[in-house]
Image (cartoon, rainbow, N blue to C red; front, side):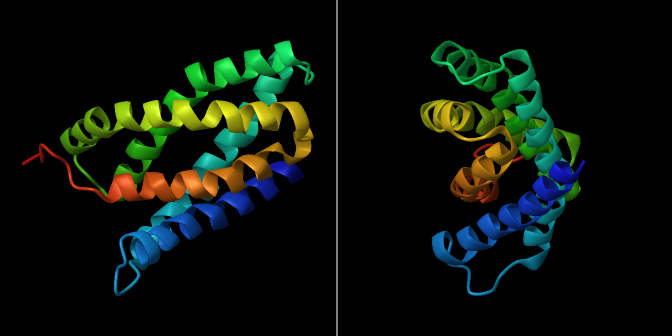
Length: 168
């Protein structure tokens, strides 16, 4: 349980940190949108942190060890099983915290999910292979969180983009 609390704390800092970074540096907002940052804190700490924590435990339980064959299996299930769920939760969860309509949530997911997943499939297998091969299991959520800071900065930017086909 202590590792879960640590993971939740890490993600409740990294997620809003990534969002605030992209607001100021990438989108260059003159003023920070603290409500948006707060939603990332709630989502990151209360949902995504536990999701990553338990996923990494499950992956290690299913394929224990760090031999190349086990690492390959973990990376494969990470991309096929975890990534689609985590990305869907990201878009749906944050839209729910914004009180968006079901139609909006569906349209945003349909529009943004495929490209997001494809981009992640080009980045995360390498990061996760290193993670599963060299990082001790107790530090894996921290490693994923630190690498995820940059990923979440990108996700936050994509999330902030307007829909091509807005829902009326």
